[in-house]
Length: 164
Image: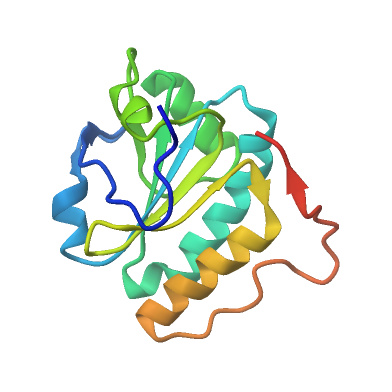
């Protein structure tokens, strides 16, 4: 199955978060775009990328940005990952047989989907791609009519890409 590409409709899903809450994509999209970030706790590229995804979340959190981490691991391991890498956005669990991951055609983690309120995927990115994260930040900032600070700080040595 091919990965859901930009311009295609995002498959609907509902997953339980590590906080016990049920998250439904359709309901969330009524309030604005959703950044769905699929990951595994053992993935080194996920460990590298998620603090930057968290940075986007923190920059736009006052505007109500919705960022969801979607883990292919159990709740306990996913909570540990969130603590270790400073992730405060909701973590949802896609249990085996990974129905949501399969519906999105995941091949690699991390894979990020910026989903518009219309349900259409606006941007899909796999691995760590510096330009994609900047573009996600830019598109979310435009949606909320804000100008967030730079995503990457001048003193940070951030590669352009790390494969997932």
